[in-house]
Structures are given as structure tokens and as C-alpha cells.
Image (cartoon, rainbow, N blue to C red; front, side, top):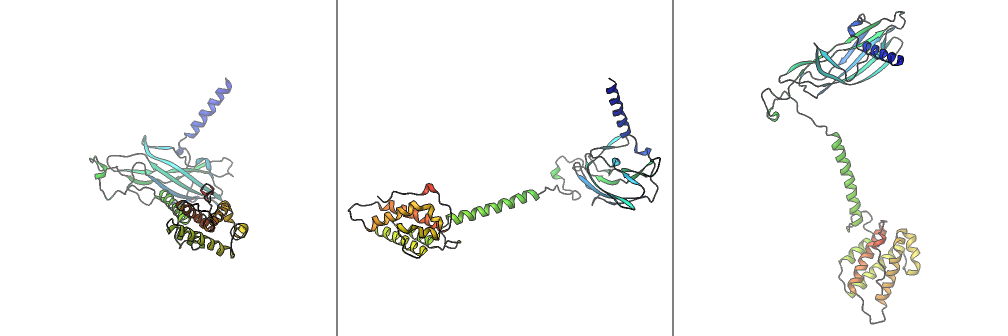
Length: 331
């Protein structure tokens, strides 16, 4: 029980010391503390929800030093003549440096306005107090220094008597601004990603010769085969063009038995090894068919178009989908 009473007493003492009126301490004598303040850029046009910033630089001469516990407390609401001021310290950051002759305190104070009226009314960013002491003083006497308030004018949201704020076109009130930095940044990044994606798709699926590696022999052959119709002569011509393309790539006549020469030139062709072997079977069937068996021109031409596209993709060193490979056309 005694333990709880002691805890309660300490709590009451701390509350009473915190609530001690700042006027209890005497002012520091003139010349010990100097101050520079960068005030907000304007005094008028503030309304409920707005924020205002002050930059304060305080220089304290030795032997006096700052009592850091006296720094302003964010969220603490002041009163004026018994009424809430309606302007609250929203955020506070500080830097404190010491040297041989003095110490410097830099404060960045952000206030937010939580009051409004039907007509314009005066307000002020409240005064702040810091405390200093001389550590060499046996009595450790504490002094206060007052950072002066800054008077502003708080405007109503609309002219008194107006119901619709959109009808209030007063030039004295600034527009409500929306921060566009993050949306614009996201939009730019998304646009760049979309552009690269589009270029990638264009490179993979395009038939045009002006793209990088699109002037290759298989790119031209694929475009040529895509234009022909399914006739016996056109199929023989398409197969001949494919043979010529392979010979140009390897620098020699390519057969099924020396496919390794093609792979040595471009290893991407190994991904379609089965289709390459199927091509040579089909070539033998078309040019050296000794039987009277007829073959389906439409099916063979469709396969040749697909095969030439795979060769074009290998020429460009693109990944060929294994599921798109077809064998068994040479029957």
C-alpha cells in the first residue's frame, strides 16, 4: 500500500512541476542571449487546417547553457485569456551545438491552425520560452528567455453570408493547392515502364526490317514466306529459301548431319533442334517424293511460316516457346 502512495505522490509532484507557470523564473539579463527568427512569408490568408513554420536561431553565451527539458512540446495547446488559442505546435525539430564561447540552438517550429470565425480575426503564433542556467553557479539559478510571438490574421472559409464557397471568388484568398509531386513521379515511372514494355513487344513480334537484328537473313526469309500462297511451287520455293538462309548463316551447305555447325554460329538454334530435323525430313519429302502420295499444301505452308518465325526469333536470340514447336508434318 505504501508503495502505491509513494508512486502517486511522485506523479502529483511531477504534474505540479510541469504545470509550473513559466513566469516563476526571472528573465535572463540582456546581452547573454541573442536571437534570429525567419518568420513565415505572409501574415494574412490563414484558415483552419493551415500550417505555418518558424525558423529560430538562439545563441547563448558561456557560461550559460540551455536546459533541454525547456524546449517547446508539440501538441501542447496554449490558452489566451482563459480561452484555447486554437493554434497548436504541430512539430518541432532542434539542433544544439556548443563551442568554447557559446552554444547555438536552432529550432524549426511548425504550427497548425484549429480555429476559425465567420469574419477575419487576429491570431498569433505563440511565444515560446526556453530556460538557461549557469552550471558553475552553486545555487543553480534558472533563468528564462522569451521567443516572441508572431501576429497573423485568420480568414474565414467564405465571406460572411455566403453559403456556397465556390461562389466566393475573393482574390485575397489563395487557391487550395494539391501536392502533385508523387502522382507525377508515379506517372513518369509508369510511362517509362510502359514504353520499354511496348518496345520489347514490338521487337519480339514485329515484321519490320528497321528494328535491331531485323535485317537478318531469317527475318527477310520469314517475311517472304508469309506472303506466298499454298501451292506446290511456292512450298518448294519457301523450302529453297530456308536452305539458302541456313547456308548463309553457316557459310556452308547445311544438312541434318552437320547441325552442330549452325549451333556453333548461334546456340539459340539448339532450342528448335526437333523442328530443324523435321525441316530436313520435309525437304526430302517435297523434293524427292518417289511415291504418288499427295501432301497437304496448306498444312505444310502453315508449318513453314511457323518454323521460319522460330528461326527468325533464334536469329534475334529471343526465347522460343517450347509449346509452339511442331513436329510430325513430314509424313
